[in-house]
Image (cartoon, rainbow over the protein chains, first blue to last red):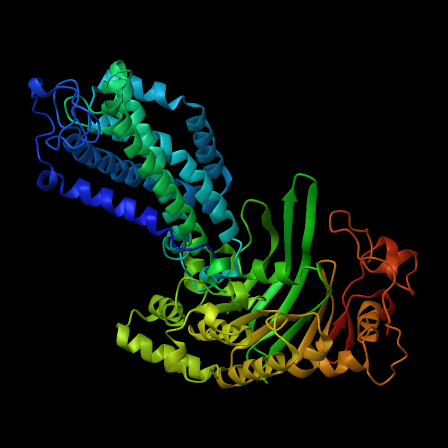
Length: 274
Length: 325
């Protein structure tokens, strides 16, 4: 079995810490502009100062402060979208897999249909009709997520329901909702947890992409994707404005993916029983 | 032994409706299970033993399987006519079941105690402390050592034999009148098998429940059962007291089945087998199903299914050779 990915856990914990305590940690307000100090490079470059550790953007806003507040947006969106999208996918997967028959056919065709939607286009459409904002962003990303959850969970349930303990629960006189809730659900929770961690990366990237395209969090609230977007016009002379939030996205997504892989191995019952 | 029938199956037929055709897995089974007896149901793989059991419990997948005719009477009322809700009340309390594979019979994420608790709570709605006391008592009844410790353990911490005992404890927790044991010892090794059989027999004599014991092992039948029913290609071909059937089997299939049990005494190194294959359940012969493999078959056997004839005291067989005897 592979060793515990301490570095990744450290990165994730640090980012969560940053997000939670952003107001206490940041030296400046993330939205107040200081036009006198605009486009200052990070402190280790020529012209940079210790006043703005990671430099400033075109409006003279401190990038470090914006990065910390941006972590909040990413994590809030990830939590809400994974709860909503993952939860719906979990329920649909269990119901479809366990009940089978017509119910399964209908639900799984819905899943197939959901996969054919161009997610980004759909999110843009939502942003236009519902207006930009956190709610729109969460709904758009949930709609992107639920189908893949439903597919994986259904597959797991198909195998589980063949096991004798399900038949014996029926012998004991358990009703079908009860079997789904108390016998099937606990058995797919480990798979669900792994899916959640593996999808954190997807959500963070989706949030960044949508914010970059202007369908996400409206400015001036900082979000990592929005920060990358804001810097793209000056990528030649002030590259740090885009690169620093870009690196933050990369680090977080890489860390949660490695962590998710490790968790999957840990929770695999075939390995766990050894 | 009283001859009161607790479970009576009349002309039960369960078919699987597949795209390729209709599989007549159980096709006209009649059986009666008397109070306090152990009735063996023997036959080779795929002859419909398990489907019979699942039809009684009404646990077959509704998408493909359907019981097309017949009655299953439990204490005089036909449970096939009951709603699913009423069936849930019947299962576990009046009929219970033990399945073949103890490895998958317990839910891996719950402790032994929690699984017993579910079974007991559904029936009694007692408080937690009382349920736990009853659970420990049940484990003691199925002869699990140190039940107070075992109750907190998870299925993967128990051996196969122990798991099957826990399954047994869950099955008898509702004090059912009828217990269906579907090859409960097939997955256990030989020494554990014997212990488990003794345990089942003891539980049966203590509670006076009737057991329908499904197996393919005549040795187990001889040890466990009062009566035995032999099944072939979806029908009961012979039924009677164990001693009579083992000594004087009437149906050629039963004779061949008993002859093919390996014996240590005449170790010639050759195993007796029955020539040919059982018929396809999708395409059954019109007459006796065993006719194609039977040494005594005549044209009538091949065209008309034999009636049930008396072959001795409390002993019947479906074979034309018994006509007029």
